[in-house]
Length: 41
Image 1 (cartoon, one colour):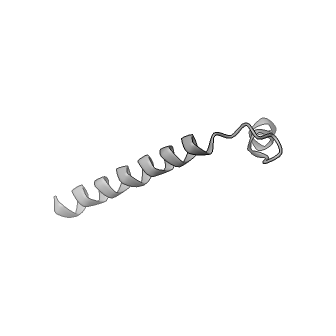
Image 2 (cartoon, helix red, strand yellow):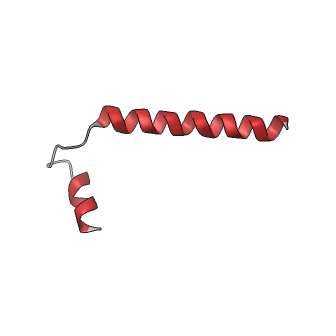
């Protein structure tokens, strides 16, 4: 757990924010598709 927190610290600078943003966008789109399928089913 400590390693995760350290890797998320801003002074480390190892975070690829484009990758994080794309994964988050993919997750949001997936949830929207799932909700639409649920509502229209």
